[in-house]
Length: 151
Image 1 (cartoon, helix red, strand yellow):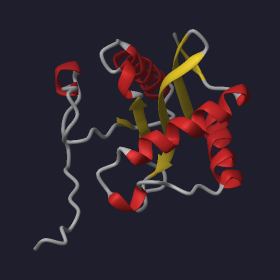
Image 2 (cartoon, rainbow, N blue to C red; image 1 turned 180 degrees about the horizontal axis):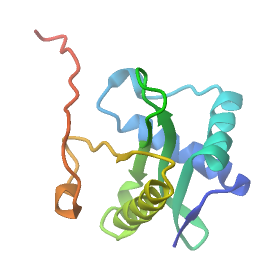
Image 3 (cartoon, one colour; image 1 turned 30 degrees about the vertical axis):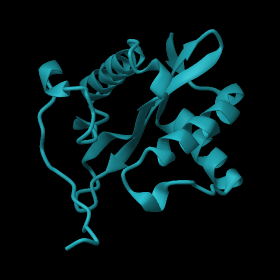
Image 4 (cartoon, one colour; image 1 turned 45 degrees about the vertical axis):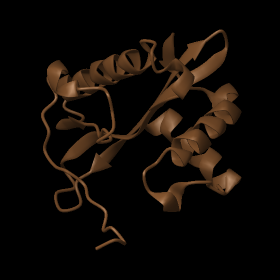
């Protein structure tokens, strides 16, 4: 099931965020030592002022999709719905949970665009992601790089 997260989910969300950070390709994010107060405050902020979706099976959260309404730095009147974290626990990646999170995110984004609350819906995928969202109507607009220490 896909649903909006609520306060009862905060502890499971914190565990998922640790797993998410530990799988990041940036070693600086691995083995995170979160300021618990700040992290929980951010999670509750996105529950109310953004999008915080969870996938759930048998009362266990299996994945998340967090997004915020973000103003453009140079054109603050332009607002986008931007994904901040999209993650499914490894043991559920062969399920439809990731796809269903994406589908719900798309629905929310389309509704916000129709209401003229945002101009764009944006998502980031890792280069290692097995998911090809271009087949779902997403268009690649940029790539991110990190300077390698091996240069």
